[in-house]
Structures are given as C-alpha cells and as structure tokens.
Length: 425
Image (tube, rainbow, N blue to C red; front, side, top):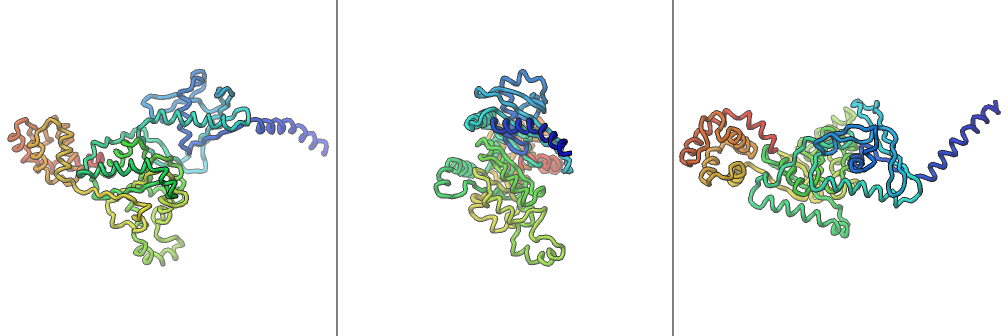
C-alpha cells in the first residue's frame, strides 16, 4: 500500500513541478464581466490585427456599434504584444446560484516573464483604445448584478433643454469648474465629488437636464433604482462607477428613509422590535447607507452625484447638507419665456406674434412636457393641430383665430401629452 501511494505521489511530481515553473515564469491578468474594463477589453480586440486570423468567434452587439461585431469565442487564443506571446483564456459559465441564472464571463491573460511594466503597457493600451473609441460621447448604464450598457439610449442636446434665463449657463459653469479642480480638492484634502439636486413638479425636465448635461461634458450616466438595492449592493454598485461619470438617483423622495429621521424613528421603533427588522428602511436602503455612498470612506472619486425629486420637503436635512448636495436647482412650471424658446426651436421661421399667440392659447399646459406634447402634435400634423381642423398659417391673424380653439384641442389630446411627457422627464 505504501508503495502504491508513493508511486501516485511521484507521478504527480512532474505536473506539480510544471505548474510551479509556469507560475514562476509568467504573469497573469484577469478581467471579470462585473468590471467596466471587461467591455474595454472587447473594444480593444476589435482593433487588433490578430482578430482577423481567429476562426472561433462570438457575435456581440453590446459594443456601442450599430453593426454586429465579432470577438474571440470562449476558449484559448494566442497573440503577440510588445514582442511577447500572450495567451488569453475566455471563460464562460452559468451562474446556477442566482435566480436570474446570469452567465459569468472573464478574460485571463498570461504572458512570459516577470516584468510588470510590460503588463502596465498592455493595460494602458486597453485604456487608450477605450478612451479613443469613447471620445466625448455619453452612454447610459443600468445595474443588474453589474453595470450593463443600454444600447438604445440617445442623450439629449443641451440646447434642447430650456430653463429660466442664466440657470443653464450657471449650472454648466459650476460643473466645468468642478471638473478642472481635481488637484485643488486633493491639495485641500477634500473628497473629489459633487452632489446636485434637481427638484420640482413632474414633467419639468429634471431627467432631460441630467441627460443633456452629461452629454455636454462627455460623461456617461449610471442610473440606480434604489428599489433594487440594499445598503451593501448599493455600495458595491457605486464603487464600480468610474471617474468622470454621473451617478443618478431618480425620485429620491420615494425612499421612505429619505424623510426626517426624527419623524420616522418614533412611530416605527416598536414595530421594528416586534418584527425583528431594522427601522427607517424601505426596499433594503437605509438613510445611513445612502449617506455612506455619497460621502463615506468608500464614496467614488471624480463622480457627479445627481438626485431628482418631486417633493424636496420629504428629504432629510442630513441628505441636503453641503458635501452631499452642493448645488440645488428648482425646475418649476413652464414660464412664457421657456415656452417661447421651445416654440422657436420647433418653428424657427415663425414670427414673434405667432409664437406669443400659441403660448397665450396654451395656458393650460403648465409643464414643459405638456407644452412639448402640443408642439409635437402640431409638427407631426404638418402644421395642423390634431382635431382642430385648422392649419398653422403664415397669416398671423388667421393663425390667432385658429389657436383660439386650442382649449378644446388640448382636452382631446391629454393622453398624448402624458406619453410625450416621458420625453422631457
């Protein structure tokens, strides 16, 4: 028996020795699919010459391209970089431990030598390729056990968002000042991030402003639905948001823990003890957990935190203090100035009298979403408001007479306005 055990051990010696030699003479880099760099590596593959000779490929439609691309299929592939041979192992497994059954993918790169600067050159090349392909475009990501790119996203143009005079210019100036102040923040020992709160009634353009602002500065938007998180998963998701990005929390008031703790703690304390659950929570998110994401030890650096709410009075004062919310902007009901500017964007050849006549006849449209719905209906009708039976004429008097009947038109088009409201907010 002893001889049998010894012979088995001796047979394993060459294999163990081989693995030891490989580990001592090679370097390894692993990239998992829950990291943003996983997509960057795929983008890097697309510009490499060796991709043309690989015969086993996968089709991919997630790489910010309108066409289907081909990337290396799961398995082992070889290529040269920096005068060294590289082996890449593309692994794909099914995650059976989660209800979603999401597959898990990873890239493992191995090369000869122990020279770490070579690996750094490889990583820098991947990053350079990503930055070059990204340019100044803005992308949208949603979280599902990792940040997933939304292919159908189309960012708003900043010129298409109409605010009160000087509001947009002041906001853009504030973001620009923050983005060029990184060294100053580091020198002062202040965490390098900034919080923005856009608040006001529904349909006033809060979400559209976030999209347009991000696109103007070439920042990608990472939107987090707090209903899908607990404190731990929110922290993990926030830590995976890269610098120079926007982390968006929409309808922050919908989280019960955003309300005043003084009001929330007392009535729920006894119930929390009886049920064995913590108080002041909803959907697994506590106020403390949210605050830690915004300015705790693990808060991401170089990120714009943007929150929107319809009811700012429901937010806890701890959430509103500087360092968490540094800039507040109220977006209220549409003013005549905003309506006139938006009308001119739709009909740049119209006269001042035509624009003011349309605005005057559209008093029941209180938000920019509702007013934009009117303009879309007018434009899509070829200058004819649906159901009104009248055209947008060049003669201003005739147009004013036509617009006088707008009240009845608006009542017939309420459903359409609600659908169009999603475009603005």
